[in-house]
Structure formats: C-alpha cells, structure tokens
Length: 341
Image (tube, rainbow, N blue to C red; front, top):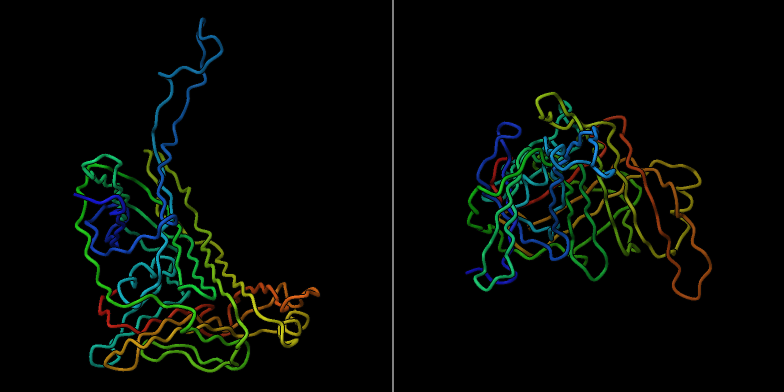
C-alpha cells in the first residue's frame, strides 16, 4: 500500500517519437516542483439552432487532439540523470575514463533540428485510505527548456519543462527503482570562474582554467530551445517538435568587491563562465563532479549595485553566445553511471 507521499516519476528515451515504452529510470520527485497536465484542445461547432438560448451546444464540442505539458523538478545527483539531461541538449555521450569512472558530456552542438523523444510516467497517490496510485503515462515527450540553479545554503536543482504528444491512464505503473546512493551536489562544493582562459571539457577530461570568482552567492542557467510544439497536421497528429533559435541565459548574484562585472558590462567584453561542483564521493578515478561551462558570455545587465547599508551585491544577467569554435554551452558529469545515452 502506497504512503501519502509515495508519488513517483520515471522516464525512458523512445526509439520512435510517440511510441511509448516502459519507463526504467526514476527521479526523487521534488515536492511542489513536479507538475503534469493535459489539454484536450476541444473544437466547437459554431452553428446555432432555434431554442439554444444563446449557448453553444454540448453535442457540437469534441476533443479531437490533445497536448501534455508539465515540469520535473529534481535535485541534481551524480548518478541516474544522464539520459534526462540529454533531453534538452540533444547531444550527449558517455565515455569510459578508466576503471569504473565514466564521463558524460552534453553540448549545444545539436545535429539536426529535433530534440530526443521520451516516455514519461507520473504515479500520483490518491487521498483514499487504500493508497491507490494512478499512473499517468505520456509519450512523444520532449524537453524544450532546462533550468539548473543553486543558491547559498541549498543543493543544485534542475527543472525540466516538457511537452507531450499523447497520454494514457491504461499503462500499468512501473516499479520505481533508484540507482543513486550519493548525496546531491550543493553550494559548499561549488567553485565558479568569471573571465580568464577556459579549457572546455572533453569526453574524458573535465574543463579547467578561468579566473576564480569567490564572491558568487547564486547561479542559474536557463537553456531554452524555443521548440515548435505546434506542428499539427491533418489526421489529428503532431510532428516531433523542431528546435528554433536557441537561447541560454545565466543569472548570478555576487558580492560587489570589485568593478570586474561592471567593466565587463560596459565594455561588452566576451567572458567565459563556469561552475564546478566536486564532491568527496570517491570514484576509481577522482571524485564525482558536475560542471557547467559557457566559454563566450556577454554581461547584459546588473554590473553595478545601488548604495546600501548592507553588503553590496550585484544581480548579473548574462547571455550565452556561440564562440568562434566549439559549443556555446557544456555540461560535464564525472560519475560511476555507465548508462549509454
């Protein structure tokens, strides 16, 4: 019998867009940050009959197609999230570093214009005394937007916004099994850089370089693929969402202890930014790590603070740009997870 908070969320990459599979990976759902919805998108006939009283007729309204939407909120942990991270990036690879140590590398150098497709299942516990769990299964799921964020006093969090082609409540609830035994990445493990020369990560080596930024209080990265999720065609179906002009933004709060950020904003300087979390969880080679690296950013707002009687801080906004070579954005994960993306 399920307990009151025994909800679950699981996923699996699809082989064919819109053809559902049984979910095999599961995340520890985040209270208040895991949502799902279905819009039946009904069509309404406009004809009226004498005696309708001015109301649209119920028998002229029909749900022809539908569209799912929602988000998955998860603490970012060192294992079990690789194929989910690949969703909004679309270009990911897992490579053996040595022994039982693997590195996952995700970049924005998308091949083609389509995002990977997934089957997604939510298990929601009813309020009845029997602990009944309803399974909501969505197929043809893509992830147009990803946000990764961390603040002082908190863990690194991810939020995946998703779109779905179809849904059913007939598919049986999959049995949740969790692969991760590590604690989430958190602010105490974080090291940031701003400016300086960055060396981007490869399939086997984590990124390095940059000028240490020891005054960062919060960090948030949003990757928006601006995917076309309205590719409806006759027959009541919808084609796989297509990526448009991708946009990535970084927002940071930093203590104002130098004019570095203002100088970068005024000079419209191209700066590299990175954030690396390194744990004490030992692998056969090194420790588990999570790294975000954007080699070419522009500070667009927030370089200078207003006078205050408190410690002065700046609220920085940066646009992630494409450098002359390489990708605009990298995420690298050092892990014991050998799962092929």
